Length: 159
Image (cartoon, rainbow, N blue to C red):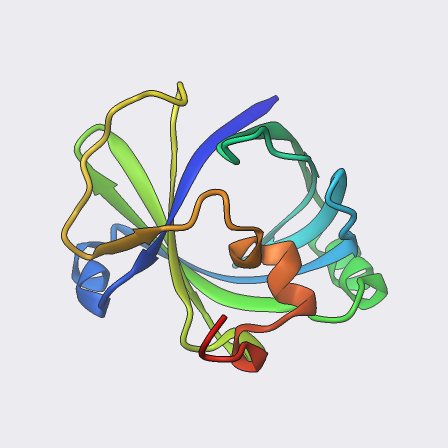
């Protein structure tokens, strides 16, 4: 029940032509405490509840527990969530032996595109396609829980 991932900004939309799958996602947070976030997510016709722990010093590894829940229950839980439901499309892109999940945000976070890659080990090597930009793994501003309360559209350009 451990997640090891790295996050990157995305420089352009060329990744879309490489996508093998796409999902429409709505997610909200029942709790955004950095020690333990509790998320409700609807992805196409499936729904999940997820608990995530605080990340380690590098920001790459943290506890993650996720269970599928009934779709109708997830819709009700989304109504109980804290302010700021995240809306995004997720593109799945295989690169070498790994899968990048690229999130293109909408609503209050429109204009933001983030790629994530899950790893088996923090020091694992992986291919970096040319559409990847700056790494933001340990930058909490790019965590979805942060974006739900501090949308990208409200950031000042000098942040």
